[in-house]
Figure 1 (cartoon, rainbow, N blue to C red):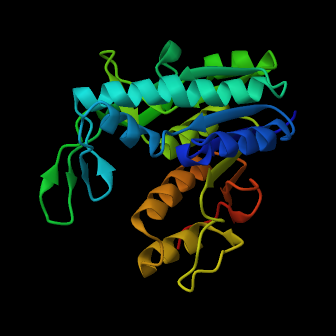
Figure 2: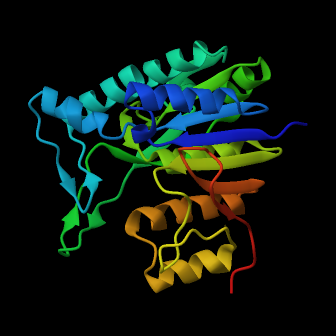
Length: 259
């Protein structure tokens, strides 16, 4: 059985046309079955500004009201997803664009209020925590030779669309697929850095915990590490955090016994 790759892309890796073309070349060269999960990057803020809506964030986290969600959907399910799918199709990849809403494949629950650095509790609005991924749709597509390209929108049990974290969605999908699965999270940095700013080639669970405790990992990386650790705990074969410029350079995360 060939290893399935679940590749998560930050939206900033394919927003501009030259970057999108380069990313499509890299994806088209990947061997074996593939699922792509992506975010929206700065394109969401640009769409909000185009609509005359001031982006609202607390400690870097987006507050998503109904107007903001409309813009998020327009970017994620619309321009971002379609442009990436089109670039892949041009390279002979049988890419299919969808979101976690389709067939209820990406279930989510409303995120609980978070405590900000000021100490106040902040309701993030229509933001969800991915809770489960139904692998049936993804398996059907992958087994037929297609590449699902999944925008990070989830849906709750009442049918409310929610803005969800792409890293966590990718981890949930990887864990749900079963079999040999490699999760690759691509971003703008070449892996996980130590306190001196050097890339760490490999980290086990104890190493992840130590890095988080030391404060060397910023809030965004802590969230990535926690999501990746959950994927390892769920049986994902391999997890990597890599540089989006080559999809290779970075850090391999491995399972281990916690201290």
